[in-house]
Image (spheres, rainbow, N blue to C red):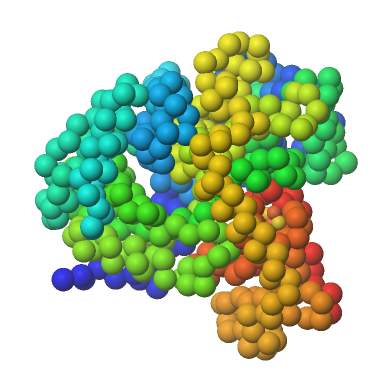
Length: 509
Ligand code: FES
């Protein structure tokens, strides 16, 4: 019997942001010069800045919000070398050597996080745990056997076991991956922020980067201020300096998460995934002396392309309550993954850009390990050190063996432009209920109209400033999401995720 409820008062925030304050920093109010300017203070930006600082480079780190206020604060922080897109697929797309290197890079990322948190004495709840991949209903054991063999060929320990270690539900046969990990991402990033400041790195928050120019002397503009540097790292989740080159090779997917209390010991501490497409992912986080939070994610869909995103959290609750004796759901949140055409992130020099501009994007559902790999790889590239992962993560790569899937994704993007011709979701703004939003056709264009919880109407253009797709209301997150390349905007039009770098303009009356 399913007793847990999705309470109306469930915080629409991640457990991380409620249990750790984000560190604050100053605004950039002057011109500056440095060795490396890093734009974006999430896992990629902070790790890169810290490692560059250790190598003796001067760094300026900019973010348009507080530190770690973007996608990093909505991760579930599974620290895994059992690659989300499956090692068998990575081997198909990148060959046996590529799969080995990919696994090795994720293993190194987890080791790096453990080393940094130990060396800096960051109390970030880092724990080594096992990971378990179990079958979705109707899936065959062959799926697990294939993945087990591919993992072993790639140098990762994996074994078949009779069931995952839940008391409350028999998952049937399952794959166990030892030596994975979990942590509290914001506690870790708070520690990294303090360490960067101790290295004399400069961090400026609420400092929106307007433009980025490469060359021998790179320039980043922030309003009237200019930061000059020898290199720039664009660590903005989806690069704000790239119009096409990367965005035709990755696709944005929304994913949803719930958090509910569970008695300690009911579920063995670990990372859990099923083989559903899109899969569920589960982990624990300490709550109080007798309970953990059970964190459950899934229900992924293409960003800006679901009419019923408001039901995603409820479906997660039902799935979780059928398997685990959870209490009421106290947290609901969501985030966006950038899924690349071949399961691995894009990390390196920005294709088709001037010299000395580097990017990291395409988390592929593994944002913390890919973000840490980016920190290691980019700091090596910038300081001229060899790194064996350089070719694997090269942003200009074209993986022919993965091209058919991406032809479909690009066709999907093309279809989105047809929305210029379709009617609005509703005839007029009058029809929009309180705490809802909808697209309204007005003459030749469309308006993104929403009402807040008190009925106040806000109207902005529905045309995404990146490349002109029509945004769609995300009922679960109360955001405007672009179905083409993943730009996201708050209800009032404020840009909260690239590749767009400006807000939705106010609607013309
Ligand atoms: Fe590219 Fe909106 S994100 S058009």
